[in-house]
Length: 131
Image: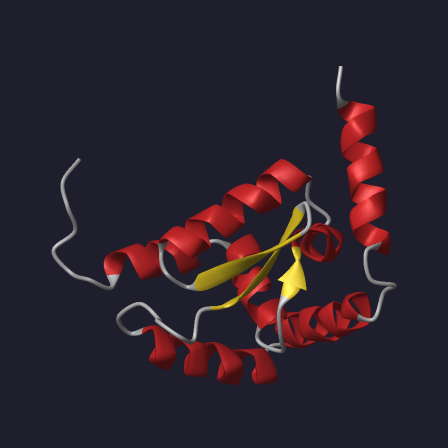
């Protein structure tokens, strides 16, 4: 596969998906556990995990192990090239876009959920889906 000539290409590719943008909008106000993002996006765990991996590989997110689950946050310690400017743009966009505002508000509500409660529910769901 041919390597991109411009350093911003991997970052733009990572942002070129609605679910990944929704994740970033949700994380603007602080970290979230994978189970919280599953609840927010109403997507299956594997799909959310795949989106998080893409964002992490692009350098946009960082993760922290929390028991069996990972907590994700925006990578402000070592952002990718152009990252800080794009984060500022995302903040502005999220203040003006009704869907982004709604996601940020919903993310705030989900963060208030009893810690671990959603993770326990998700773990039970995943266990029930196993053959």
